[in-house]
Length: 288
Ligand code: 6GU
Image 1 (cartoon, rainbow, N blue to C red):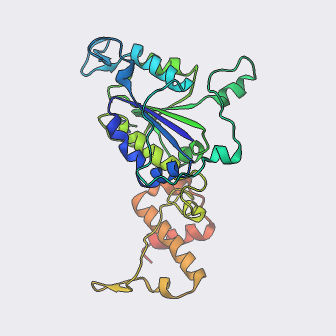
Image 2 (cartoon, protein in one colour):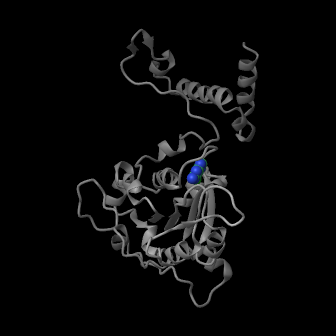
Image 3 (tube, rainbow, N blue to C red):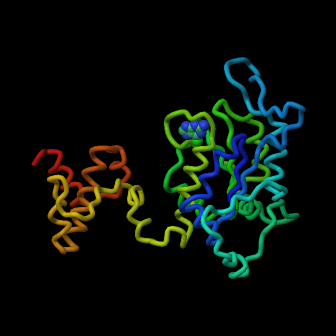
């Protein structure tokens, strides 16, 4: 996967080099480019925003700056700094060299079925509090993308024609990471990148830990414990030290149900609950 981020705060994206994402870069599973939007500014002041038509507070980001930026990034015409991993370089071959994968140009081919054209386009993610909610299902789907581009605007937004026009070169998604307002899309781009990259096969290393993630089955994960068995007068639940795997699995599932009912009751409506799950919750609700 390749991730490009266009932003007026490139340093804000430095965490992409660390920890899990840095490891993915080392493994050749991820390339990251961060691009300063001001490179595409076309006046002496390098201005990227202007006052909104129709009046009102704040500033709106200019189409004449964003348009060429997104054109260049879609076409791979960027001379900006590649983010290297912060981990020591391992000098491993990249996976596309090992597996003989040929790089695909992202420009529109001369012919082809409309749907195929659509499928070859890179994904443009525009973080905005006015977007559709970003979910684990999105993270799963996007972890299979070849080229993901983030357009980070300030919260007052980017001129909407930029988003409309970008649909000629990208599949465009305007998404929100929650019901609160951030100053700009940068932190959201970090959040979404981490959620996606950890699902690229081989990056997290442990398939089972994906399957047990909160949300994978529509429920929250229950509590976890490690040694020592007694700590500050608190004991680890007895079942976990019983060695009875069947009992452990059942207990963990019940803890998921209880926690979800308590903290995110709306999730239970769309979760696939068995008859015994429903009976368990009914009994708990009754305070039995
Ligand atoms: Cl994706 N962007 C911004 N700027 N603010 C947000 C957000 C995104 N999601 C919630 N608040």
